[in-house]
Amino acid sequence: MKLKLWFLETRPNFLLLSVVLSFLGTSMAKHDGDFNLVRALLGFVGLLLCHISVNVLNDYFDYRSGIDLKTRRTPFSGGSGLLPSGALKPAHVLRFGVAAFLLAVPIGVYFVIVTGWLLLPLLIVAALCILLYTPLLTKIGWPEWSPGVGLGALPVLGAYFIQTGAYTLSAALASVPSGLLVHNLLLLNEFPDVEADKTAGRKTLPITIGKRKAAYVYSAFTVAVYVWIAALVAAGIMPVYCLLAFLTLGRAAKAIRGALHPDDPSRLLPAMGHNVLVILLTQLLLGIGYLLGDTIPIHLF
Image (cartoon, rainbow, N blue to C red; front, side, top):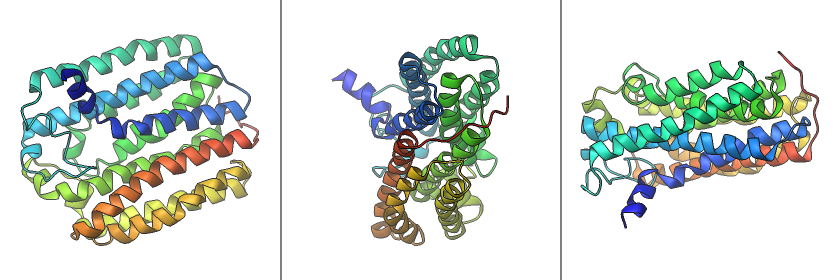
C-alpha cells in the first residue's frame, strides 16, 4: 500500500510527457542517422528521474507554503493531495524528491563523458529549472518559461545530443514546439490555483496579467506551435510527415475555446484535458513524422 502511495506521489499521469519528449528527440537523431538503444533508454531514465524530482519537490513546496491546503484539486492541478491528507510525511517527500534528482546526476555525468562537454551547459540549465522553479522562479513573474525550457525544449535537444554528439540548427528549431507546449501545460493548469497561489506570493502569468490576458497568451502560443511546424516543413527543416501533428488541431481549438472562459469550470476543466492530449499527441506525432521522413542536419558545432 505504501509503495502505491509513493508511486502516486510521482504524479504518474504527467510522466507520460517524459516518454514523448525522449521519443521525439531520439526520433530526430535516428532520422539523421544516429541511434543507440542503450543511450536512448538510459537518457529516458535520467529524464524520468528529473521529472519525478520536479513533481515531488513541487508537491512538497506547495504543501509547506500552504497552497495545497487552499486550492481545489482537479485531475490536472492542485498537487497529489497526499501531503494534505496526511498519507505521507513532508520530510519523507522532500527526501524522495532530492533522491530522484541525485540519482539522475551520475547519468548526466556519464553522458558528458561519452558524448562531449557541450552537453554540460544544457544539463546545468535544466537542473536549475528543476531546483529553482517552485521556491524561486514562481515568485518573480512569468515562471512558465522555466518548465517550457527545462522540461520541454532542452530534453528534446538533449535526447538528440546524446545520440549524435552534436547540436544542429534543425534540431534546435524543432525543439521549439515542445517548449511552447510545455509552457502551455503549466500555464493552463495554473488557472484554477490563482487565489491559492496569491496567498503564497506567487506571480504566475494568470496572476500578473490576469486570467483573461493569460488565456490570450495561451491561445497565441498554441497557434504558434502549428505555425512553427508548418514553417519548418515548408523550409525543408522538418520532414513533411511532421504535418501529422496537425491531427491534434481540433483538440487544440477546443482547448483554446475553454481557456477563453477561465472562470467557468464547466468549460475550463475539459479544456485542460484537451490541452494535455494536445501536448502529448502533438509531440508523439512529430516523432513519428521524423521516423517516416528524412532531412539533412546542419551542424552548429
